[in-house]
Image (tube, rainbow, N blue to C red):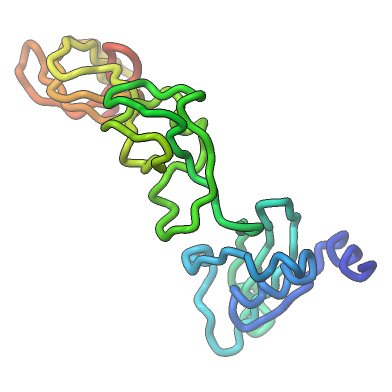
Length: 220
């Protein structure tokens, strides 16, 4: 245990392997051996590192762990020279949690904190579901959601600040100059979402971004 603490204190690698996944597993086993079998490692986690090749070794240094996550620095070295580095986070300690409906949520309803709760999810494609309650509070249900049903990301949308047919104020910025014009919204969108508008004078169709209620911007 003292050797591990010393390694963590000076930031020295505590695991080395020919693949990044194995280096992470070895590093994790020295921090929390009982949790390693539930460490959730996905191949895409290593996209910021070079692929394994002859002569390359991966060194992993634990940066900290909690009841749900394990953080580790992984360094790729090829013939003794650094070839890449990434700080990665992995989940452990059981299945991930997803947001479920705590009560029936009608189509078009604005979701409140009391409408949802968290529940463990053991199925596939967990990334398709919302994992944080804060991500859905204030969002709008695209369709009716029954109690106990997991909320997919595609099941909610932002509240519309611009609606199809609205007359909106559009600020067009080019360089350091800004021009404000009136336009008709050809679609609906929430804050930060794209919306097409038609200039009320020129009839030209413009791709804009919603900024606030009744307003959008174009940056050129």
